[in-house]
Each structure stands twice: as C-alpha cells, then as structure tokens.
Length: 342
Ligand code: PBG
View 1 (cartoon, rainbow, N blue to C red):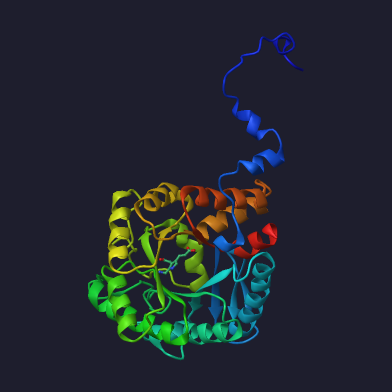
View 2 (view 1 turned 120 degrees about the vertical axis):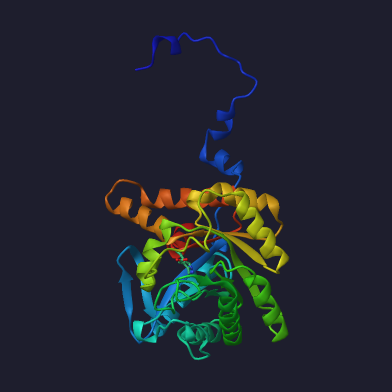
C-alpha cells in the first residue's frame, strides 16, 4: 500500500530527474552507453588429438575438448552465427590438450611444425580463411612440470632461454597461418623478441595480441583442468603479476606497446575491471579482456544451482567489461552470447 504522503505529496521539483530517461525500454536503449555485439567476442577453444572426440570439461560445463574434425564442425557452426549478425564476427583463440607422453621438460612439441596447434591452425584457415585465428604462445600445455617457461634444477623459471623457445613456437604458428600469436607466458622481453623474429622471417602481417597485464590468479583453475596443465610444483607468481598491483600493469603495457604489441590484454577480467579502465586510458591500441575459466565456472555453477539468472548475469558481466573499456572480450560464453544477440 502506498504511504499516505504519496497521495498528498508536495512535488520536489528538482531540475534533474534522471529517472525520466529510464521510463521505457525504448528510452533506455536510446541513451544506452555501451552495447555488447558479436564483433566484440573471441571464442577460446580447446583442441585435442584423435578423431570424433568431444569431451565436456567437468569444471566448465558447456565447454569441450574437441578433436580437429569436430572442432572444424563447431567452428563452422559458430561462424554462421557470426555471419547472420555480422560477417567474421566471432573469432577464435586456440589451446591444445597435449597427452602426457608428448610433454617434456623443454616443450619440444610447442614448435613442431606438424604439432597439434599448427595442424589445427592450418585446417581452420583452409576451411574458413576469413576467420581470425589467434594462437596462444606459452609452454605450459607442453611441459611435464606445467610451467610457462623452462625451469632449472632449482625450480627457477628461466627468462631468456624460454623466450628462445617462444620465438620458435610463434614462428611455427605463423607458418601454419595464424593471424595473431598471443604470448601468455609473461616472460620479460618476449613481445619484442617475437616481433623481431616474425619480421625477419617475413611474417610482417602476423599480429601480436599480448597478454600484457596477466595476473597470478586462482581464476585459472578450470582452464588448467581442461589442459591437465596445473603446475606440478610451486606457482606462477615469479612471472605472472601480483593481484594487488595496478601501476605495474601500466608498466607492463607500456613495455609491450614499445616492443610492438598490436592488441594488449588484461587477464582475468571481472576482478580487474579497474585495470581494464586504467589501461584503456593509457593507450590508443585496442584493449582485450580475458573473461577466464573461473569466471565462467562461477556463473555456470550458480546458475545450475538455480541461484542466479544465467543469461542476465552473463550479459551484465560482459557488458561491465565493455563499460570498463574493453574493445574485445575473450570468453567461453561467446557462442551462447552470439545466440542471445542474434
Ligand atoms: C597459458 C594460459 C592460461 C590461461 C590462458 N593461457 C593458464 C595459466 O596461465 O596458468 C588461462 C585461461 C583461463 O583460465 O581461462 N599460459
């Protein structure tokens, strides 16, 4: 029941009544500041060896490890969604699931010209050349110890020797036809070294999407399940950033830009919206945000429990990343969102 005062009220007559612009759905759309579109999305996908494999990742319901044949089918289907909305709108980042017997201490499979990533990139570009394919550059899917770099006998992650392997990896991905290589390893100097090597080998048009401000985050847990790539000892805190730091993120992006990055990325996204915002103000390059596996898993789990409205929470989360300043969002929700937006 309305309080008595609401029938006998005296108008406040404020000069501004912000609610005027919220009155109807049409009005709200008219003054909406940020809109999520299929163009913003990059779909990270997991590829595994073999044929006719599509295995759901337990901690990432709705995400699968695909063998190449089924991955190509899925990509063609998702690409159609993009075409209906906007051509070539949903693009792909690739992660390989490497069997234990092909892992070693020095990640030799990472730069095998006939390796899983290289074959997959080749096949995707052959099937649908317009797709933008982004290949991740880091050693962790390929090392027995699960670290992103080479490790000495004391357990120290070696920076410069790792960069030499990353260069070989990036070159092999470029040779396979990747549009972008995406160093996610956080070694110092790797963007410049990879740029130089790409240029020297004639891959002047292969871009670098740099994981510039990549934090040592507990939100990567489900991804490491997907790849069986959790570090066997220690953690990644000597190379990935401390969650408490913001200025350091600006230092990292400054370095990556100076070293030749084309797109810079902040990762994770949701707990780091302030970083996305500051990075956006600090650069005119496109800014990407990685809506990581743990962010995905939290929404899926709460939705499965019936505790949140899955669709609305997904849209709200991704829109918050755009509002913070992200031009691009890597998200496991890409297909689901594309279906919502069409
Ligand atoms: C590999 C890599 C990781 C992610 C992307 N590339 C894992 C890690 O750094 O441990 C995480 C992605 C996600 O959690 O969705 N270096």
